[in-house]
Length: 162
Image (tube, rainbow, N blue to C red; front, side, top):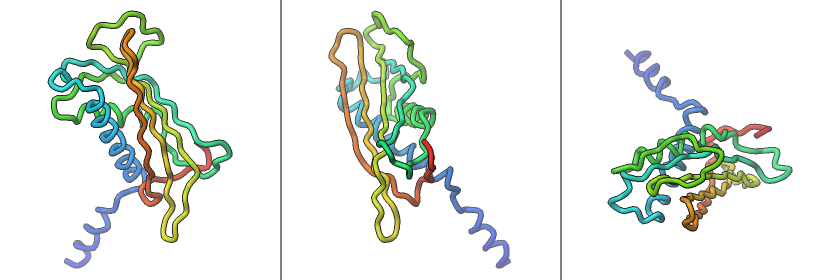
């Protein structure tokens, strides 16, 4: 019986990939909540359609100790974050190269994630980031939002190359 209990505890360990997914997913949920709040769609949110363009993910120059978050992972996190909201907008993980005239309910979301220089602490390393969101619609002035934070080094794997 002891062997069964111990093996059950061992199987509950979270892999580094799952930890990264959880951290990036949380970032996507936080960004989605922030975006919808700032857009002031209120009860019209379910009628809005958001096209998510390919995000840009980059690191500060000469930063050799970077997080490995791909544009696809960030786009997936933003998509899932938006869809997890109560009364979510409609979301498409694709955006056209030229927008032209868009219907009133159609918005284009652009995102950029900057990985900053890591901050070593005594027991772990923090990986600061800056997430820039810009959501545009026809001739209306685009909404620009910036959120900053840090991933705990124990929750996300790092890579020598972005």
